Image 1 (cartoon, one colour):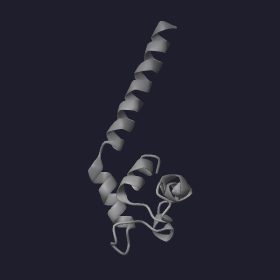
Image 2 (tube, one colour):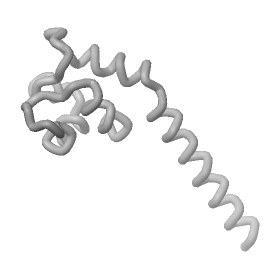
Image 3 (cartoon, one colour):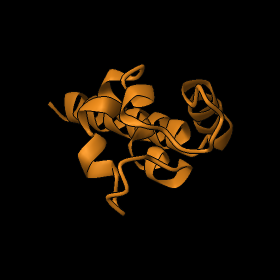
Image 4 (cartoon, helix red, strand yellow):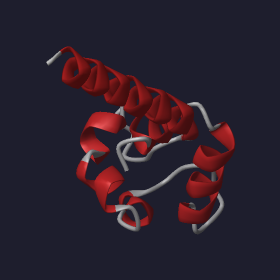
Length: 82
């Protein structure tokens, strides 16, 4: 039983570290944002965000300033979930 608990704890730590690594990679976030920003205006419209279904599903929550577009900071907040 102790071995099983230790294995489960180690697995959880490894997954947590992996998630933090993905979240901490600003290059990947920037690349995804730039790719989705079809018109190059530095923000994602709803139509542009539709290319990333998970971002599109969270668009309202991510659009903190309610301007109808996601800037890089707003996009970054949801990118790891995407």
